[in-house]
Image (cartoon, rainbow, N blue to C red; front, top):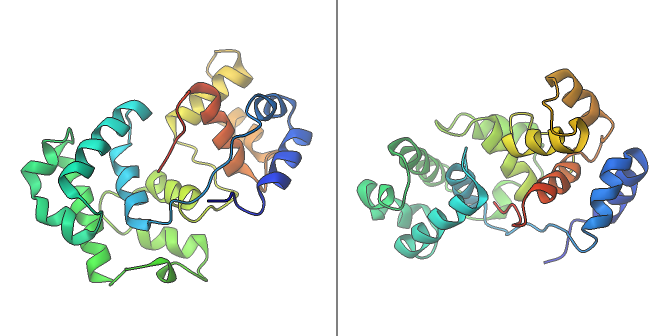
Amino acid sequence: MSPPNYWQKSKEFLANADPKLAQLIQEHPEYSIASRGEALETLLRSIVGQQISIQAAASIWGRLEKKIGKVSPENVISVGFDDLKSCGLSKQKVQYLTNICDHFLTCSISDHSYWEDRSFKDIYDELITIKGVGPWTAEMFGMFYLLEKDIFPIKDIGVIRAMNQVYGEGKSLSLEKIISISETWRPYRSVACLFLWRSIDSEEVLY
């Protein structure tokens, strides 16, 4: 899978706009991103990964995959509530996974064509109608499935932690300061966040 067509241009832009990002980009010259091409899997992984570490999310997802087999709405629902919960999920997260699968079945979402030629705002507005899919999950879908280049997930704990380290020298930055810094990254805020995540975790963020 090849990176999005804006990848090289975005790295050059960010390196010129922000010396601290330039250093992160230089430290990870081979890093790039590609969509896994599976909308449902991206959404389900985002729910699993909410408010837990990358390592914990990967462990839970591995157990889920063994029970589900091929990731499809029908297969997830057929596993049943208790078996899904036994993978390490809360009752709430199991319900959210089920809600997403119900939405895919109701809307007959079967391939990428459902999402094509639509604005991110339009897709975002649809996704957040699903109970359990909030702004953060919709933003992860935009970044990792749609490969939108200019999303800033302002409530992501990893982005905030990385910005505190890189720009605040370990001290907490105000929300105003975080937003101010992120504005200098437009129109490639997604790419900046990907390198920030990379700077604090040896494992790639994958949704």
